[in-house]
Length: 574
Image (cartoon, rainbow, N blue to C red; front, side):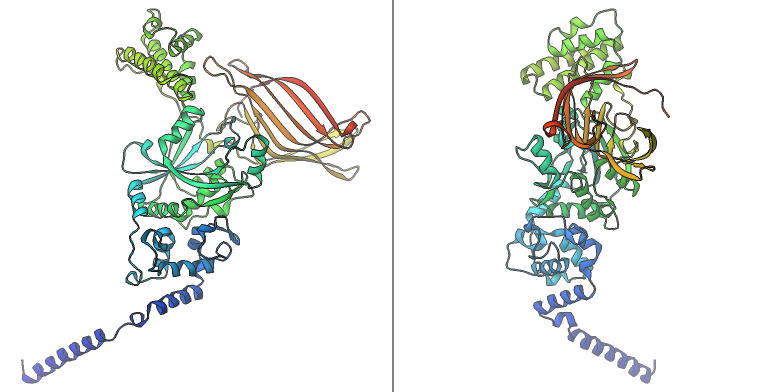
């Protein structure tokens, strides 16, 4: 290389070194800013770019329309945060930079989902934030270790008013193989001692507070499957682990936070959907809801948006008992009951004139009954242990021969049953005048509807309205309005003895002797018994009473009592 070339090369090296020195010695604009100036720049950016109006931020605040559905003031850092997402964003940013708060109370620990999203959206320099140790949240996150989320739907339970429409909650699975060790994330109303009519009124008008809670899944299975005789459907969801982390962070933010609970719309199912959107903000679930939210409709919505990857059916203990019993004769069913009651020993019930499969079925049925009686606290722990172990000992001597009675084929998925809405159009003649009739039922299921996906013998109709138009009279009027109409015709068996009941209230036109048909308010109810006949269907009998009220009645009311006998059967499947 020539001297001139070497001189040029040295010049380039020196120039490069000088440029690097000058570049490294000039701090960036952000580095020049004080902590206060840096925070102000973030606030200006968020305001200029309208970050507070972006969907992920509003999801984390549970915003619907112009306000948040969360009522608890502890959830908001700004006094106007419930109605002002911009003010809440600024307050959250300021809290994230506050270094004078203890670790677990710092905003990054208290609101990890908000903080994580703002860090990413505004590209906040982590070195600028005060170092924190969120030990309480980290303990919860390590304990949950989310691997999969499952939407759980326990079927309707007609003898519990809060569960007549069914229920939904989330199960979060971890690396344990047993799903029973997962965490159930539930949203429910805190009702205290309220019951009866007061319970319904408070639930309809938002006088209850609703809270999120996390508890072991096996406790919910024990409550629904064992005690309340409710089948459980588990809809496995396709969230990624990163999305599940966001869901867990938002669940933590909602700890001990309440919202006003409304049975019709702001209920268990609608609030659970916010957790799905927090995990995956591109979902549109909460903004697809109507004036009332029925749990099974939200299951349909989740499935429609492609979140479901698999469905698992978990039959209740009552379903298992009824299934095994259906394979046995009445005599053998009674023997199983005697064994479970401790009236005879398992050995005494197994005579030579029944097959080995029947013997296995009798013992399996007796074992299920003993567990059911114990779950319902109908027998003591000592009696349970003695009878259950005795049955298992005898059963174990029969080997592992397969028994077809142990398999319960899943029924129709509940979300594949008929829709909640029903619109009917008809016509007729009354007192020589033709009329056209339209009927609208917003929810939910009637005895005359197909049973697929619903509980047999159950009816719950809400807001059913019938209107008629008389062309000759040019008159349009409301014919009836069922505010609520419930029937629980649960059949009695050798194992279960439920009491059937019905209740309805609303407005209807009562035809009087003078030919008038004024609109009157009514309330009726009663109790009875139901039997299930394989030949004809459900046969029920009720003792009932009714009270009507209206200005056209003597003393403005009428009271009566009587009874009804009915048959519910399917003539043909269409």
